[in-house]
Length: 456
Image (cartoon, rainbow, N blue to C red; front, side, top):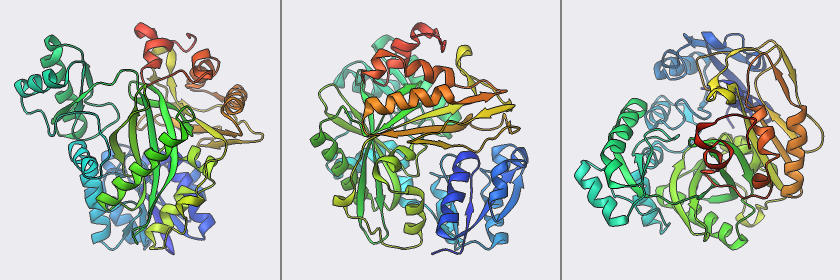
């Protein structure tokens, strides 16, 4: 086991890794930007090092400064968390070339799975079904038009590198294709420095289901069952659940087997997530791999009892997985909501500022993962996530009721948050009955741009 680990991240995930290290008896070094110098979780690390100014490019995205901090602190490994450099193959390669173990997959796997067109090729090799689409970037409008005619409209234009909804456009007819392609290319270039896009057949009203995988450096790979992440707004997840309880168990088992085959084909180890779309007939299609720990990993932990962050660290230290597939059982139902410092009544405008009051819910089956406390100032420089509220109960209806109660208890004063939106969702008949898909928020809850948390 490592003696000392550096956490190359901030906020909620930095605190999550600090806690895992403490329970493993590993010293932990936190890094921070000037914007985060007063973050309360820094006091829980064994050491904290400032790595630069508030801008991400001067701190959390600055590889030389992170490596310098690791050298100064004499660590053996670096945990990237999620976001920032967590899926940057160059960072993973540099860490290992500087004799710091990167707590994540091999850089070759990150690079291959980071390009969605390459990921689809590997999925085909692993006999994992993908959404029908182009084999590579659509290099010209004419090529895109020919392909769209071949698979039929509507089509989905997607950035070849990256995710999070950037560089993604639905095109329903030939007349709008050229404009949609240009918009997607511009967004992809701005977000990922790569304007390449590709086309997929657009699946109407799909579910978004992902499978958590764990693999060790000795070649053992397992899945930790599935999560439903269908409730999204503009391709950003709002609510996540485990398991995807509306799916027949045989479909869930096939999803897990497909994810394991894919991981083995690409030589994947550590934690990762294989993401799929599921249509109305329960056919599933691979879309991408997230080569890191996910924001929504707690729901899998709650139903399986597996501490995924500890497993990441053990795997990176070379330990065997020590968990057989038949021992991974999904018990009960868990739901997570993301609490962001945003104003749902004004197009989800960011709401940085000082938190003047905080009431955290409790009781059986309630978990609060957050780095904030009363008096903490949410900086304007980074992602607006301020906390994750997670519940667990024997059944989905009980979990929904528990989350509804926990949301009513949760109070964050001083900044606008998405709490009112979630309270609305958990009282909505469609959601309660599980009748949602990836388009439901814009189509039903907030139709025609009327983005008010009071609607629905």
